[in-house]
Figure 1 (cartoon, rainbow, N blue to C red):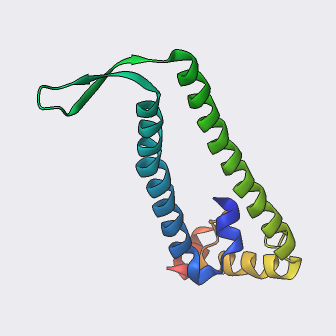
Figure 2 (cartoon, rainbow, N blue to C red):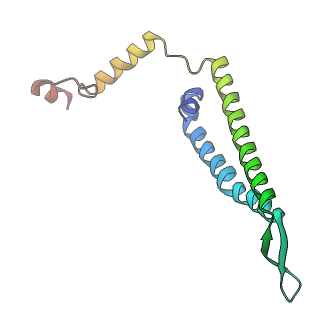
Length: 134
């Protein structure tokens, strides 16, 4: 999340965080149960058939295949996540968006912060200065 906020321009940060949350919910909460449900349904060896001829619940799973497929799909998902994490890291290193800000920019930001309110950075303000600020 921090890399996302530092690699995007200031005007696009809200859009980037919103898009990230959308894709996380879309891929994680919607596709995950569908994919794992189809994997689990594919492992069933004996199905209960209703009187109308439709397939019902699973009566018997092949436990060895169940174990192997469940761990294989989980491992593939983690491998894919780590691949995209590595790709993002390489992009961030190549573009330099993870580098520290230059000292003159940091100093000017500190001055702006102190001008707005002196006690933001923990500085003590005398009662006379407090009256002048407000």
